[in-house]
Structure formats: structure tokens, C-alpha cells
Amino acid sequence: MKALVRRGVRIAAGLALGACTALVELLLALVSAVALLLVLAWPRARRAVLRPVFAAAVRLATVERRRLAVLLDIHVSPAYDGGRALRYVAVRWLPGLLGAVVLAYGVVGAGFGTFFAYGWLIEDIDNPLTVAFSSAAGLLLFFLSAQGIFGLALLERKLAQHFLGPSPSEVLENRILELAASRAGVVEAVQDERRRIERDLHDGVQQRLVALGMLIGRARRSQDPAHARHLLLQAHEESQRALTELREVAWRVHPTVLDEAGFRAAVETVVERCPMPVVVHYGDFNTEPARAPSTVAYFVVAESVTNAVKHSGASRLYLELDWRDGILRVSIEDDGAGGADPAGGGLTGLSRRVAALDGSLRVDSPPGGPTTITAEIPCA
Image (cartoon, rainbow, N blue to C red):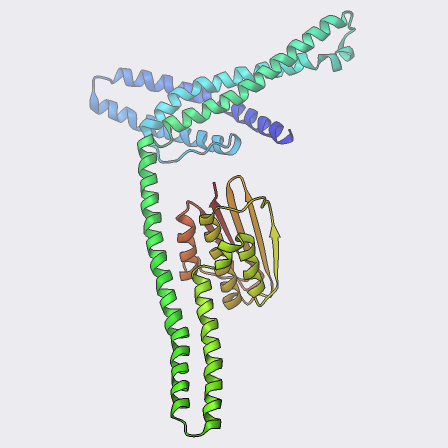
């Protein structure tokens, strides 16, 4: 209820300010119409008149765009030309003045609706029934005005999006560009992951297997049974280390616990394997997230924890997980030295993974720390 009242007050302030700008817009529309009618037959003169008119319309549209964003929580793209701005200004003055009328009725309704509370201080009330009826009518007028305020806010949104916002074809074009970019990012992320797996296998598991083969070969060629047993013992230990590294590589490719036990269990496994303390806070997790976003969120956690352990010099990690309003949010903060590069290979790969699901990844790492990595992944 408090949030609704605050929103209503903010919208009312926006409409009141919009009523003031509507007078300027009406004046500009009238002056522009008269000036263009006078030079309608002369193209050069018409272009000369349109230049200052377009400039004034763009300035007014910029003012309106800021008013809409700050007070009405309506965000419009700034990519509009003078013609679209002039058409918007030429129409916007009408709902602006209508907003002044609705606000005036709201003030009158509030005055009459609360007259029973303060009326006896002003004059003697001889007919309480009349006061009761007038108060009821005032409250009804105030209620209708409040409905009108929210309706005008919706009208402001529609007008701004129609005249200033991108057209449906532009929205589709932008969406196609976003999908093409995210697809290219996914392909590059897959290539980076493939190269990382090849590097891990070549530098880790392959070297272990080569050493294992050499130990077994030396044991076969040895004429000393005790030395051969010692070499076989070393070979057995090397095989255990190779198996451990192979499991690490497989874990980084895709953890089986994510499929078997779910997202929370996979995150807890990362926390258990971390050599430094990790404070974990879970928000709203009533059900298990979908497989694709939970997989991406897992890799955000795993990569961020790995980077913090290797590069941050931190002594503690703070992990926050939340899933509400269809958004899976992951936040990892460390108390290290900061200075993480968002364009680095690991973070770029994470950003591509998140962008593939229309999510966003933010890295806040000022020099001196702390470093905070926040991912928001749609999870319908």
C-alpha cells in the first residue's frame, strides 16, 4: 500500500510538471504551425524555418524524456530526429493540460472528502447529513481522479513510445542484431571452452599419462625386483593423480551433480572445494531453476570463485543467490585487492554465456577492492 501511494505521488508530481511543459509545447506548436503556413509555398524558406523548430522540439522532447524517466518510470530511447520530436510535442500538450485538470479535480475531491474532519473549525455545521454527502462525493471525485492519474501515466507511456520510441520494425531489427551478436558470442565461448579443455588435457592429464607410461616402462626393464616394485608404486600414485586431474577436467566441462542433485547441490560442491571461507546466502528458492539458466549460473559461480582464489588475494568470499520475478541472480563478492579486468578471457566467456540467455553480467572491481560479480539470468 505504501509503495502504491508513493508511486501515485510521484506520478502526480510528474503530471504537474508535465502540465507546465505542456504550455510551452502548445506555444511551440502554434508558432510552428503559423510560421510553416506562411512559408509553405517556398521550400527553401520552409527548410530555414524547420531547422530552429526541430531544434526547439528536440530540446523539449529531451526535457520530457527526463521527466518521464525520473517521475513516471518511463524510459524512451534518445534516438529520435527533429521530425519525430516535433510530432510528439505537437500532441503531448493535450494530455499535459488534461493532467492539470485531473490534478485540480483531485485537490477539490480531497478538500470536500475531508471537510468533515476540519469543517467544524471553520464554520458551524448545522446540517451534518449534507456534510456527510458532500464528503462522500468528494471522496468519490478523489478516487476517480486517482484512477485518472494512473490512466494518464499509461497514456504518456503510449505517446512517448509511439512518437519517440523505436518503431516495431526498428525493435525487430535491434532484436535481430542482439540475437546475431549473442549467437556469435556463444560460438566464440564454445571455441574458448574447447581450447581450454584441450589445454587442460595437454598440460595436465597427458603429461601425467606420459609419466605413467615411462614409470611402467622402467619397471618392466628393471632387473631389480625391489626397484621394479618401487617404480610400480610410483606408477600407481601417478595413475591416481591422472585420474584426479581427469575428473577435474570433466567437472569443469559439466558437473554431474548439477544433473543428479540440482543447482544448490552443485553450488555447495563448489563452496566445499574452495580453499577459503565462503559465506553463502540463499534468497527465494522454492523450486529448482530450469536447466539452461542454472547451468550458466553454476559456471558463473565456479569461474568467479576460481578467479578469486587465483588472482584476488582475498581471505573470504560472499555468495548470494536469489530467484524471483523470473530472474536468477548470482552475486559473488571478495575482499581482495580488486582491479579485475572485465575484458579478461574468463570474464568475457562468462559474459557471453550469460548474454546467450538474454542475461547481463556486471563486474565492479575498483583498485583496492572489493570485487563484485553480478549475473542476472532470465529464468522463465
